[in-house]
Amino acid sequence: FVDRNALEEILERATQIPVNRAQFEIQNQLISKALTASVSKATNLVATRLSKPKPINEVPLPTAIASRTIQIDNIVSSLTRDGVSWIFGTAGVGKTIGAKVAARRLGGQWAGINLRGLNAEQVDVVISEAIDKLTEERLDGFLIDDLECSFEPHIIEKLLYLLAICRRIDLLLLFTSCRQLSPDILFSANLPATIEQKLDDFSEYDIQEILTGLGVHESNWAKYIHLLSGGGHPQRRGG
Image (tube, rainbow, N blue to C red; front, side, top):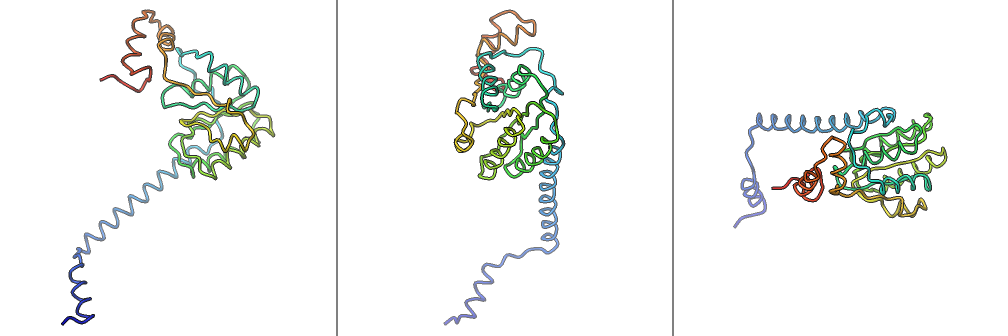
């Protein structure tokens, strides 16, 4: 017969895992360092984006680009009509360049921030700081580049607030993102779906334009590059 106390003792011995105390302390220190480094890295990532929005012409456009006239016309039209445009597409298809080309066509003083690699909480902090600085600057347009985070409720609220501020101070607002705009934002801000412009992979014609700008006029190269890239995506390679 085994009473309750004896049973608990047996279970404790069976489930007890011997741990060397020195080793346990070392592991705790390593975990603590890893967590500290992770938090520090995230904090530094946000800190580097908290400076005043920078003029978008600080980084010049490439010497050879695809004109994408139809898409750029649509972006300019949305900015002129609705005061905002949302450019989306996969990485590497030229969203930032397209945004800068549209801004250049409209003219005026444009500044921007880059949100690449930031999560929703970090994006909230950076946009909040940018909003505070926008009211102090004399700008005609504002570019929010590489908005990658998910549309959490607080992000939707922040973007709606940003839209309201830009409308109040008559500031054009241009986004680039890897995802389409949330329908909740379109509805709440009373915006048409036409403010969205997707940029697809480069066509053979786009590639030929870029090559021509680089002084390469042989059309077969455009066909070859388009085929090798799996249909015009610059970050894709054939096997």
